[in-house]
Length: 210
Image (cartoon, rainbow, N blue to C red):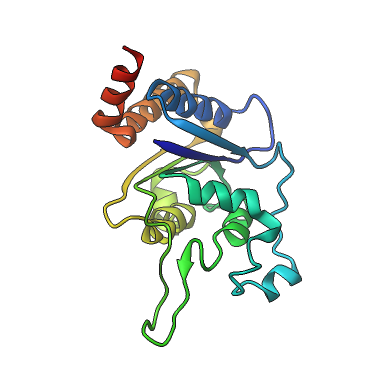
């Protein structure tokens, strides 16, 4: 199991960091190979430049500015996002990561003479996890349409393996949360991670440790 964790939060010690730690602990317990991308810590630039936009469809050159991130995406079979939901959607840092890293020739294949629409390029990814927090309630988020969740669990999911396993966990009403609600949510994250990893991976980890 090769997991790429894309983590996004500007402050150390946030609850989102606690969620990330649960995710990382579960991956370690499963014996997974893990690459963590802490976008704020590494100063990732989310802005798609004019030059990158110009060569966006040039598969020979469109990975150059974000080569290591593209390499991580090509390497993993498990992709996990950990971030806070802002204005019902993805933080600019995560959206910019998608804009710059999920390029043609890697994330998807462009239409051609035989294909009228794009085709999936991430078919090596068989697990997709999304872990977030929301200031709004579940019902208000649902009313607005949860654009962040849809971008990842519909948009990115469509580029992955046909039977890609997905999990999602959100702590709603985060601004009025309590220590008890946060603790319950961390337990929920742990259970979702167990589901994402699956019994085979856990069994394999036990055999490797024996």
